[in-house]
Length: 214
Image 1 (cartoon, one colour):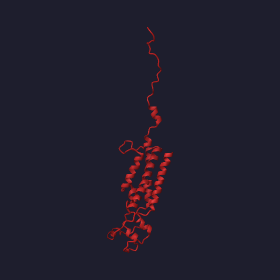
Image 2: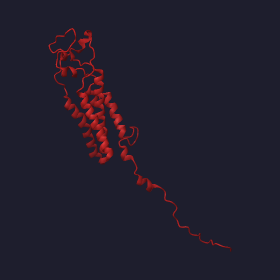
Image 3: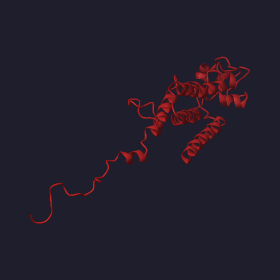
């Protein structure tokens, strides 16, 4: 029970760090006048896939697959618990790592110009006149959190998914790669039962043999 509490605490801490980094300002990369054309795409008012929906899909889809496998294969509670722990750790680490890289790189989004200058008029000092929050979010283009959470187009997501899988499961080349380490451990009591019994036969004289002189 203590180990489970520690596992949950680690994930709660990572989630807190992820939320904290969501509100930090990224590195302000200097944009040269000759490259401003790269960021003059029309301003995107809303994502094709809203962020909340993306988080829900990335979290609930693996859990749904785990529950379906439990029903089909009739796995025990230990396997389900380990699968949930692996998925939650992968999602938390992926979010923290993705946000950290975003803050360090500070790459502008393709529509950064109209975030910075809503009226389309750029001043010579390159000082943004737009909404500060919108401008700050416009400097968080790389890496894409949608791609990293999809576990398909994001290398970061794939790496953390495998690392967290290996924390709870054997290598993929192992024939028991679908079984968590906890289920593969042999209880100590069984090991003791498997030990060969000591020679407990009574020390009785062999038949036909007598002691003393004949």
